[in-house]
Image (tube, rainbow over all chains, first blue to last red):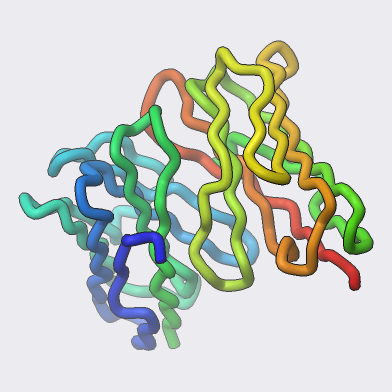
Length: 113
Length: 111
């Protein structure tokens, strides 16, 4: 168990809908990362937060947004869902960006039908 | 975009043999990390090597880093069936705190 909790584990929704994925980082970790993993694109970096503030942005679509709350949990919001958004979404946390490795949650498997 | 690129894409070896995976990257880095992923599960951090280090060991794992060639290798000695997984290198670049992953090497240990 990595200590990073992601909910829900599975999500099936229709095209055009909006979903929210939740991540609770390891106790004491200030940094949260979000990744999307699909078969053809590999593990794509979406966005990183550090202590509530956006720190780095990757290939995140405009339909996607995220935030980190004062209690350090984070949410990834995906809207106007398309079939191609079906993927595994991972959250990871670390103590200090650039100094330590990241601990990954078990992921949320999103299926858009 | 991918920063690191692993080679080979897939590798099958007999149990007990050593497995070597390579990673090349493009820009200067703070550190390079290796992760393991069992099918459909979360990634597990294996080892981190800083840009000023050349070699690091952890149990049966040995990682080397050559910043002049922008490359790293992961050696797993005396492989076991439980080592069957995908292995990813990830880089933490100098200019930001993104951890960018390669596409991984699928390692299969044959009994």
